[in-house]
Image (tube, rainbow, N blue to C red; front, side, top):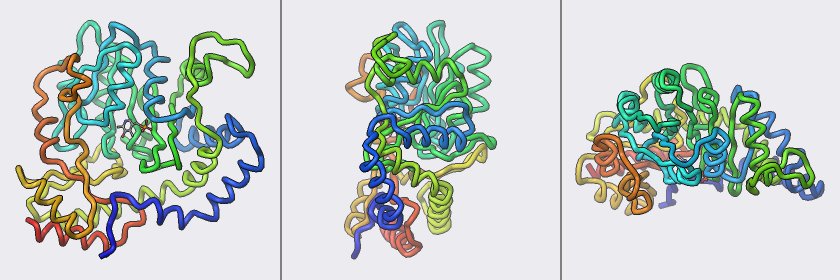
Length: 368
Ligand SMILES: *Cc1c(COP(=O)(O)O)cnc(C)c1O
């Protein structure tokens, strides 16, 4: 039987091939490979789409987090509250600034930071809150914004998985001081290589980030105000992303269709399908469910036998990673630990057919 991958980038390329190939050919012939017209146009198109004054592209989602935190003044001695149930880059970026990640537990239904626990974890040294809109569902930004306002903290959003998701009608990345996006190929808006983006409506912050991403210079030339980085999005990726941006609403609609189809087929089983908290629009970067205790290996084996991919995002919460053994936590992280033991992500991508969804659902039901 034809394998069903987690994400099928091949069918997407086939569908968009004429547009993408033409865009690539134009860049090649134009020879402006770094910070050229496509990067400029993409940044302005993204700022419009996301409802922010500034969209500054960079080399990766990890860099986007790092540059946003650094430009916001996060540094040694500062604590940044974040989730332990995320990709490691979220916390790495905090460490790059010399600050300390403080891991706070999640709401086990949404997999996102629990605002009540965040409020309880704030100390004298807390400078920022870094929520992750995990799997494409916005974190509770109303509650987190209220905490940040009251305690005078900086709120920066990890939007790597949430391109196009909205919270109370606002795009993720337009709510906090800044948002950090990733264009890693498998993300909802994915390039054909690495790429990232910082969004903000703060003019000074945007200037600072533009300077940091380009060796600490404000304008072309050789005057460097600070020690910066080489973290630019390349022109080929920008051209490809401009093509894909034209289809992103359709991609996200199709992801929601796949999630709804899975939901219909799996809701009367022992599997706990994703919970939508109704605060915003989930864009299903992943379709991640909770399986009954101790059954995950068997479910994955059954899927594998039927040539169906599955993945565990994420098997080890960050506070359990050797890399973060020296860092602190605030309170119990029991939900993050139990979710890490029971989570299972299924294939999901815009082009997934109803037949493929049936095959995955039938295989899971038979395995239960
Ligand atoms: C992918 C991802 C990142 C990092 O993005 P890269 O572009 O791979 O550097 C950061 N945070 C989360 C939650 C991610 O999923």
